[in-house]
Image (cartoon, rainbow, N blue to C red; front, side):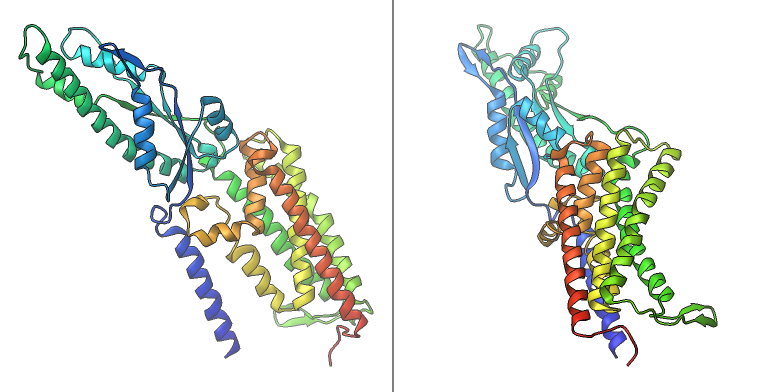
Length: 411
């Protein structure tokens, strides 16, 4: 009965986390950060100052649902900083000549000559993830389509009023002119600092993170099993044969220290192997040393904590580690689908889940020039915090077990 209940509960948790994570990102959208930059200098029409950029900014602020999108009105320098740090997933840029070009377009409807429609640029941030880029384009396209239609109506009405008030009077707009005025704005998509080849369109950081977490998680499982086997705490099976060494007279704390030592030695070796394979596969590694050091720290932090959990909970620690590092970690990493497009409890998990912290650090190194603000600083100190928790948990628990005479031997 016990195994049935455990399997059922684990699979229910898996279904809740993974299906809830991926099924409807647009419905789950909340606090999705996009910058809005209005550079329009305005224009003078019939002696009256006009600034279409201000009107569009107000319309977007009013119409974009605030519960779904965090629209941040900013200057161009601030927007570039936010994009560069990965703090926004994209930006909408209104050009400095927006009002002037619309005036020229209106005049061009009745005066011969070549003209161009003004363009609003939607800047995406591919370094924050492919799906985030798609959401930016969807949100911006929907909002700007409405804005384009409203501006078109106002421009058409203004041109018609001007024609009707002209000395000749009664001049009609042609069909082609009406079509041009009804759709006066071009929307351009422009990626900010496009990713180079060899990054999997922004997925390489996630899969590298997965490698690091698995190295610590599965490495801890392997070290735990092989050390316990060598010390005689559990038998080692080879098909139908098994070997059971004499039980070594080691305390729980001493055994745990030995396991910590093995995973600590293995971490830089594995981290170096990951770098070597990435290099062979032509993966861009502009900050290889930073990636090596951070990956080593993360592997040690995950491995030490996983070993401590096994020391505290015994065999049940396998399940605890699986849930902590994998079941809850993958969907709350914010790597494939941004956290702002997942159920809000994912963001709560991401505040402490190891995989999210490691992903922020790896992404910062691979895509944001190893700067601290995009996530490396958080990844480092959260890894150190996790390592400290693992060390204290394991050392205190095994010390108490030893003091109470709870030795690892059959009873």
